[in-house]
Length: 304
Image: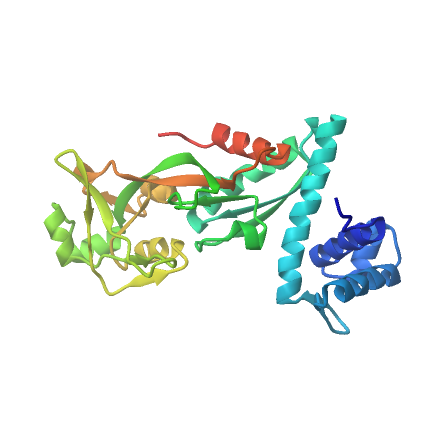
């Protein structure tokens, strides 16, 4: 077996990751208990080996180049796997530790995930969390995420998909809107109303609304002059402001409904839901911090 790495090179990679995470050679030096000059020499050594510039440097800051970002994500995962392997062998893996990167869509993040993370950190203080909140699909390999939460399971067979929740949908509008336009009494009445739309960023497709008809879940296209993309919570803000009807997750508007700020409509056609799926790459030895986080979410999220 050919040897590709020596102790100096592995140390340089570790210092490079410190610098990339902290955004500063000085901060990286302090974290590693070395001098800033040592960090600078290590980065230069890597750049010479790779023939690629890893950082753009100015007098005030450093920033990863595109090549540096790709190299950082791969190195971060590799170092994490080495750490996990060492913990498993020595038995110290009994306590989860290390960085965990999680991507979650806006509504689930704000109303489900983020409220739980304080408790998770209290239970597992040695796990640090980097939470990416966005409705776009992420690339595990290129972007270095450990877990993602999405509204549908992908076709990628390299990912494990585990359902977290079937989130109930509800049709709502504000009392002010209903005072001006009246309540829809049947599904056909929706054609007469301003139905606020959301456009999926991944496809550009407007999401059809879901209703129960004769015991069967049915998609119903609706129309309106207001449409949001990227930020799904925008449609709820519009509904609260009296701009129209919106179908959204009950957990987002349950307090509005309790206060009377929003009114549930067509409950006889309710009972539909959309899933939220937890995704993570296949791995022979899944790290303890990932397994612990997955078990924590499953235990603390409501089930339907």
